[in-house]
Image (tube, rainbow over all chains, first blue to last red; front, side):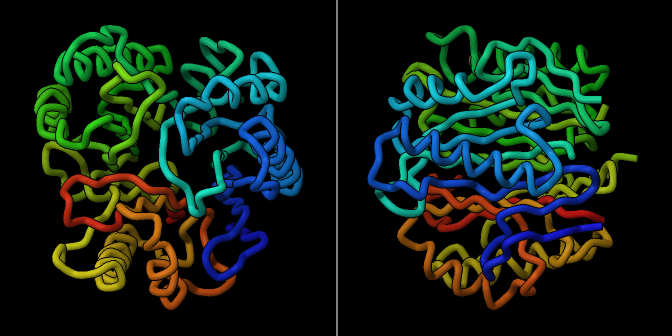
Length: 114
Length: 114
Length: 114
């Protein structure tokens, strides 16, 4: 009933349970890039995890976004809005927090229906 | 099965799915007010979104609160405690984060049962 | 259907609803201790709340961790990894935020299946 994907001792990249997909906070692999390219990289990873869960970005229900610098919210939103399907936006909260390493500018955590 | 309310391209103010209501992080419309008045405004908006979902504050299960200044926790709690129904308090975490604009002092994100 | 445990006017330490257990953000009781001892104390409290919910750490689905200083992530992870059951890691996000009082170094919020 609970399935854990890509577990690494600290967290699972994806957990499915109770009809929902729970993703870990996703950060960019292109850590030397700016906010737009980091956001694009994060969203591409989220697409892949949601596909693995037999879910889809249109089925996201709630999303938390952390920005290293809240001043990046406009640039992050531009990439986000190009990705999202109108009418299928999740509930969302975006706040500022320092992330695991100083080069990380954005972290996104998704809950979706399967 | 998933219903999105008041979508604006970036997020939906409310999503209902799987028996739950997921609200976006709510911030105050009276942005020039102090922490008490901002909290009152946020909680009134939450009441309205929960009603739209056929839910109620007594059915909240989990809440995240972000304060621009954690020193405001006492003043925020005073308003919160006047609003909450004893015995129906949700699980909750309250931490400090800078919010989307500098005048915002509090953001509250709610998950409730329908 | 919704059960609230250890309510104190501000929050419930534990809420069970819809097949899930929602825990409030847990902070250490040994507030003068370092990050390792605070993390151990928090995880022991989480074990107890999960038992009260007829759940278990192996059934955690999603976890939020806030560190007062993100530089503590390695020391926190060491304690976390000794506690977690390999293959049952939850989805997780870890970010930096100041917590309710200056002596608190870590806060952990858990959602689990029952």
